[in-house]
Image (cartoon, rainbow, N blue to C red):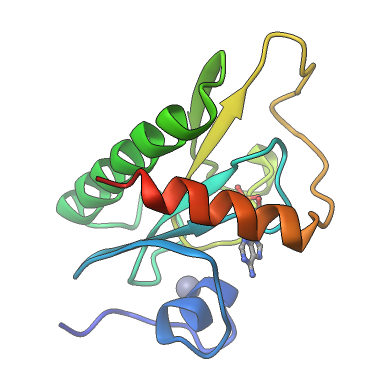
Length: 142
Ligand code: AMP
Ligand code: ZN
Protein backbone atom coordinates (compact mmCIF):
# COMPACT_ATOMS: atom_id res chain seq x y z
CA UNK A 1 0.00 0.00 0.00
CA UNK A 2 1.38 3.45 -0.91
CA UNK A 3 1.84 5.91 1.94
CA UNK A 4 2.63 9.62 1.73
CA UNK A 5 6.34 10.09 2.46
CA UNK A 6 8.75 12.96 3.04
CA UNK A 7 12.33 12.19 1.96
CA UNK A 8 13.72 14.52 4.65
CA UNK A 9 11.76 12.97 7.53
CA UNK A 10 13.65 10.76 9.99
CA UNK A 11 10.64 8.52 10.67
CA UNK A 12 9.96 8.10 6.93
CA UNK A 13 13.59 6.96 6.63
CA UNK A 14 13.04 4.42 9.42
CA UNK A 15 9.84 3.19 7.70
CA UNK A 16 11.77 2.88 4.41
CA UNK A 17 14.56 0.98 6.21
CA UNK A 18 17.27 3.45 5.19
CA UNK A 19 18.13 4.15 8.83
CA UNK A 20 18.03 1.48 11.54
CA UNK A 21 15.77 1.16 14.55
CA UNK A 22 15.16 -1.21 17.44
CA UNK A 23 11.90 -2.51 15.95
CA UNK A 24 9.15 -3.85 18.18
CA UNK A 25 6.25 -4.10 15.72
CA UNK A 26 5.56 -3.81 11.99
CA UNK A 27 2.25 -4.02 10.12
CA UNK A 28 0.63 -2.50 7.01
CA UNK A 29 -0.13 0.85 8.65
CA UNK A 30 2.24 1.16 11.61
CA UNK A 31 5.69 0.51 13.01
CA UNK A 32 6.94 0.65 16.60
CA UNK A 33 10.48 1.00 17.89
CA UNK A 34 12.54 2.10 20.87
CA UNK A 35 13.10 5.85 21.35
CA UNK A 36 16.86 6.44 21.15
CA UNK A 37 16.65 9.50 23.43
CA UNK A 38 14.56 7.87 26.14
CA UNK A 39 12.90 10.08 28.76
CA UNK A 40 12.76 6.94 30.93
CA UNK A 41 13.92 3.33 30.52
CA UNK A 42 11.71 1.45 28.07
CA UNK A 43 10.48 4.55 26.19
CA UNK A 44 9.06 3.42 22.83
CA UNK A 45 7.14 4.96 19.91
CA UNK A 46 4.15 3.79 17.87
CA UNK A 47 4.43 5.45 14.47
CA UNK A 48 2.20 5.70 11.38
CA UNK A 49 3.94 4.35 8.28
CA UNK A 50 2.63 7.28 6.22
CA UNK A 51 3.89 10.82 6.66
CA UNK A 52 1.11 12.79 8.29
CA UNK A 53 2.43 15.47 10.65
CA UNK A 54 -0.38 15.76 13.19
CA UNK A 55 -3.63 14.35 14.52
CA UNK A 56 -5.42 16.85 12.26
CA UNK A 57 -3.89 15.45 9.05
CA UNK A 58 -3.94 11.69 9.57
CA UNK A 59 -6.89 9.57 8.40
CA UNK A 60 -8.97 8.40 11.37
CA UNK A 61 -8.49 4.71 10.59
CA UNK A 62 -4.69 5.08 10.55
CA UNK A 63 -4.81 6.97 13.85
CA UNK A 64 -6.80 4.02 15.20
CA UNK A 65 -4.11 1.61 13.96
CA UNK A 66 -1.36 3.70 15.63
CA UNK A 67 -3.37 3.61 18.89
CA UNK A 68 -3.76 -0.18 18.64
CA UNK A 69 -0.01 -0.58 18.14
CA UNK A 70 0.63 1.73 21.11
CA UNK A 71 -1.62 -0.53 23.21
CA UNK A 72 0.29 -3.64 22.10
CA UNK A 73 3.65 -2.01 22.89
CA UNK A 74 2.36 -0.64 26.19
CA UNK A 75 1.29 -4.12 27.32
CA UNK A 76 4.74 -5.50 26.48
CA UNK A 77 6.53 -2.60 28.23
CA UNK A 78 4.29 -3.08 31.27
CA UNK A 79 5.01 -6.82 31.36
CA UNK A 80 8.75 -6.25 30.94
CA UNK A 81 9.43 -3.37 33.33
CA UNK A 82 6.38 -3.33 35.59
CA UNK A 83 6.58 0.46 35.92
CA UNK A 84 4.32 2.32 38.35
CA UNK A 85 2.52 3.82 35.36
CA UNK A 86 2.70 4.42 31.60
CA UNK A 87 1.83 7.65 29.76
CA UNK A 88 0.72 7.52 26.14
CA UNK A 89 1.66 10.97 24.82
CA UNK A 90 1.11 12.42 21.36
CA UNK A 91 2.34 15.93 20.48
CA UNK A 92 1.04 18.22 17.72
CA UNK A 93 3.00 21.33 16.75
CA UNK A 94 5.95 23.22 18.25
CA UNK A 95 3.91 24.61 21.14
CA UNK A 96 3.31 21.02 22.20
CA UNK A 97 7.07 20.30 21.86
CA UNK A 98 6.63 18.07 18.80
CA UNK A 99 10.15 17.57 17.42
CA UNK A 100 9.39 15.05 14.63
CA UNK A 101 6.46 16.17 12.44
CA UNK A 102 5.36 12.61 11.60
CA UNK A 103 2.55 11.28 13.76
CA UNK A 104 3.57 9.03 16.65
CA UNK A 105 2.41 8.06 20.11
CA UNK A 106 5.00 7.87 22.89
CA UNK A 107 4.76 4.84 25.19
CA UNK A 108 6.47 6.24 28.26
CA UNK A 109 6.98 4.15 31.41
CA UNK A 110 6.60 6.23 34.59
CA UNK A 111 7.68 6.01 38.19
CA UNK A 112 6.24 8.16 40.96
CA UNK A 113 9.67 9.57 41.76
CA UNK A 114 10.84 10.30 38.17
CA UNK A 115 9.86 14.01 38.33
CA UNK A 116 9.28 13.97 34.57
CA UNK A 117 7.68 17.10 33.11
CA UNK A 118 5.51 16.92 29.98
CA UNK A 119 8.21 18.89 28.08
CA UNK A 120 11.21 16.72 28.92
CA UNK A 121 14.59 17.52 27.34
CA UNK A 122 15.65 14.62 25.08
CA UNK A 123 19.24 13.48 25.36
CA UNK A 124 20.95 10.49 23.71
CA UNK A 125 20.41 7.19 25.49
CA UNK A 126 22.91 4.41 26.23
CA UNK A 127 22.62 2.22 23.09
CA UNK A 128 23.65 -0.98 24.90
CA UNK A 129 20.93 -0.42 27.49
CA UNK A 130 18.32 0.37 24.81
CA UNK A 131 19.35 -2.75 22.86
CA UNK A 132 19.00 -4.92 25.98
CA UNK A 133 15.57 -3.44 26.79
CA UNK A 134 14.52 -3.89 23.17
CA UNK A 135 15.25 -7.61 23.40
CA UNK A 136 13.35 -7.95 26.68
CA UNK A 137 10.28 -6.00 25.47
CA UNK A 138 10.27 -7.79 22.10
CA UNK A 139 10.14 -11.12 23.94
CA UNK A 140 6.92 -9.92 25.62
CA UNK A 141 5.18 -8.63 22.48
CA UNK A 142 2.82 -11.62 22.48
P1 AMP B 1 8.20 14.40 19.64
O1 AMP B 1 9.15 15.42 20.26
O2 AMP B 1 6.93 14.21 20.41
O3 AMP B 1 7.98 14.72 18.18
O4 AMP B 1 8.94 13.00 19.73
C1 AMP B 1 9.91 12.58 18.81
C2 AMP B 1 10.68 11.48 19.47
O5 AMP B 1 11.43 10.81 18.46
C3 AMP B 1 11.70 11.97 20.52
O6 AMP B 1 11.40 11.37 21.77
C4 AMP B 1 13.04 11.51 19.94
O7 AMP B 1 13.91 11.06 20.95
C5 AMP B 1 12.63 10.38 19.03
N1 AMP B 1 13.55 10.10 17.94
C6 AMP B 1 14.12 10.99 17.09
N2 AMP B 1 14.91 10.35 16.21
C7 AMP B 1 14.82 9.02 16.49
C8 AMP B 1 15.42 7.84 15.93
N3 AMP B 1 16.25 7.90 14.89
N4 AMP B 1 15.11 6.65 16.48
C9 AMP B 1 14.27 6.57 17.54
N5 AMP B 1 13.69 7.64 18.11
C10 AMP B 1 13.96 8.85 17.60
ZN1 ZN C 1 7.65 11.16 7.83
